[in-house]
Length: 176
Image (cartoon, rainbow, N blue to C red; front, side, top):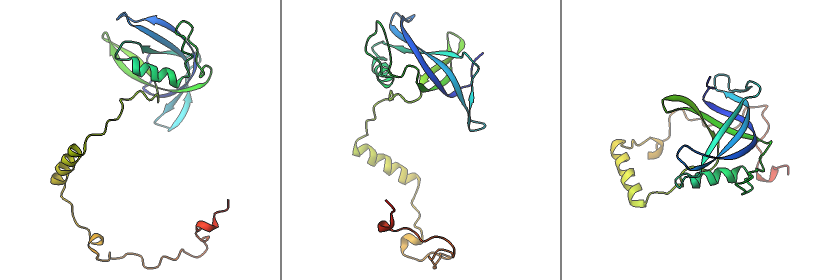
């Protein structure tokens, strides 16, 4: 039975090297999954005892940069013959999504934040200017009274705090 998709906390237990069906080397990292974040209650709840799951890290040419970042985030010792991690027996945040593999629903586990996202490459100024122009054309700006120097109606004129509230601290009142 599949676990619910979402955020989990687990304890890293270790890893072994394997060969994927594609022939590429991969590392199988084992986790004891202990907690699931239940979005309906906005609370963490325990998972069933002995819930062990695996995260697969491919070392294909395309996946190598992402797998390296994941390994670094776990404190990998750099020894693929005997992999060990600084994060062993430590809590690690994971995410899990359902995916279809060879026609079957599977759990796909991932480190919640490993820095494996694509490097951000900001578009050039010309591209950004073109996007701004397209946006402005579709969304004409409407001048607001305040922007035109006209006082807003019903704006509060008394800025004194109500009686009984402590005075607002100023820069030289900071107690440290």
